[in-house]
Image (cartoon, rainbow, N blue to C red; front, side, top):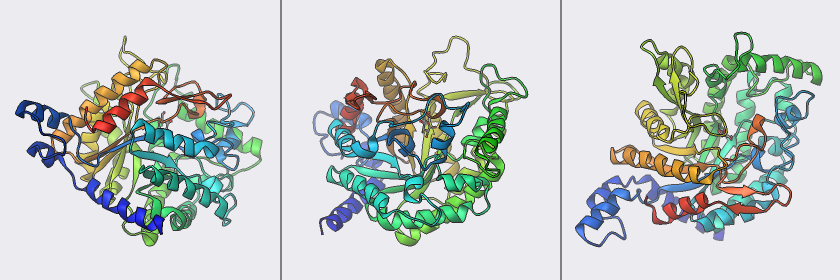
Length: 454
Ligand code: BGC
């Protein structure tokens, strides 16, 4: 069968990807390096390892549209919702995925990171939709048709409504429920998946405790507002146990999610033992801002338990957007710093620092599964990519095992509570017509991918 053939080709390719090629670059034996000694040295210095992944990322709820069985759809439509606007049709990627995957391939990229939506696959507890599993299978087939390596995230923030009604990640049963979903999804999709991630950024609730937003006062911090928001939601929904990833009890949820990762990974491996499994982490480039900085406490609090778990994984996904200056908590960006649409400091070098940290702490291969910038000025995105990739190059030159770079995001999309305002996309989306227009940064990254070199 064509599928089987494609899968074994894919495995060979993955094997190649796994053969870390920095040594090749150093010895000048990368294909295509022939000219003069000087040119050869220059090219080798700019080249990335053979098989390095060049990708764009999306997440189901942010692009598919009409994710009506999810917890966040419900929350978006509550009175006084914390969301600026509802996700609605989003980018209608649910229907337009093939066009989007072809576009990503035409740009020159080699990998697509996307998430499958648990709320669609298991819309009622114990009821699995074959039609939805087939939908995601068709997405994977579309990737394979274009030789695009698929990186699949099983849970990118959203969960099914029924799961939220039962307390989401605060529910002691949550890890087994998640593992069951992982097993069912892998049975339908595992043979076509190249890399699996159980969770996207499960450390976010703890990270939020370190962030102080402008206007935050004791008693009104983001975390306190969210906790109050959860109580209001429970009342409105008349659902006393309702909870959700971003609004839940961070500590309880983390214990269950750590266990859900382990059980989920075992479930995935029980179906396809050689499928690389990991998770992705939100990592700020934490820099001490005072002699008594709490940087180490922050690292231990936010990333600690996850980094410990990652040591046993096949790879780890690093997701970085900016740096944080840490005193007792994160400080606001320095006065006069250039800010992105998210209010983050424009600081592309942050990625190099988090890759180094993640690799040192875990010892497993790193894939940059998200990196990017929210801006209306696409020239800034080009600059951001260029500077971030120079950092990745320096990591590679030091022998750090980095397997790929995936931009957040392929498309301008639904940025959670911020709605559609922030523009993270390599490609603009007209939300009336759903017309896609690649920005110059898309061609810029595509060109780097084609040359496998900066
Ligand atoms: C998340 C994405 C999000 C991006 C930009 C990451 O925290 O995984 O879903 O859109 O950052 O804020």
